[in-house]
Image (cartoon, rainbow, N blue to C red; front, side, top):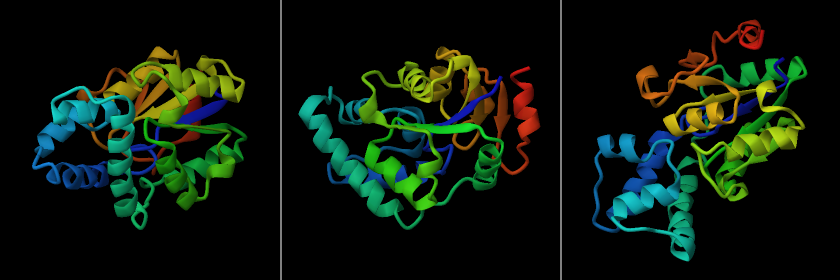
Length: 217
């Protein structure tokens, strides 16, 4: 039975990828690097900063250096995005529907805590999220299921009572690896670019709660 819905954030609650691209462009331009959009699609969307920075800078970025560079890039992102926060079409109405049905809700993102605080804060839904986990809360990143298993534990539920909304291959894989049902949000990727999900949506406008509960029958 469905008891909780866990949302990834980037590309799921808000379509932030274009703004992350701008932040990375500014970050890399300072270092005389100019990745193409195709490279971003392959090596940025849905990936954690350790992977992204190591890939584009051409060497292993970790530890203190990773923390400093990540801080610089995410600071650029927050500066660009703070006045642009805008949920994916229909998200707020769908979220309200979940709450009116008494379902638990959570966010589980690979983004840093400061990004989560910014977005959830602007949308004003923090108090209605029974769990909020960011990159600092896990040691293993998606596709590892750690962030989803920790979310379920924090909600006091079994993985099979949770539904995940994800937009990337690594994120959807993490939900599947956690033993949860997964809805693929096609904001950044096509169906073919995601693992097999239980349902796919373009946005939340016509998303029916009854339809979602059927997945758990």
